[in-house]
Length: 100
Image (cartoon, rainbow, N blue to C red; front, side, top):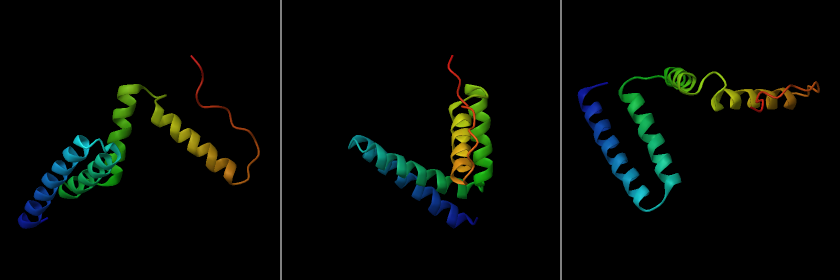
């Protein structure tokens, strides 16, 4: 990425941060979250971070902070079961989350 392009992206990130702060002050959490997602996307492009790298980082942090049975892990199991059922399979699948 060229110096001019990087500088323009840095200015854009700064503008997004200003808008995020404004959305938070105005009690618009969904808007702030969308703007934060846009900021992350721009920063990933600036630093040439792929979506796969970000996903791997998030999964590593999730496992290290919450263990192998974290919410993210369980959500993936639930989505997998839904796909399984939507394809017409009728055999029941055991629950991924156990009490206790």
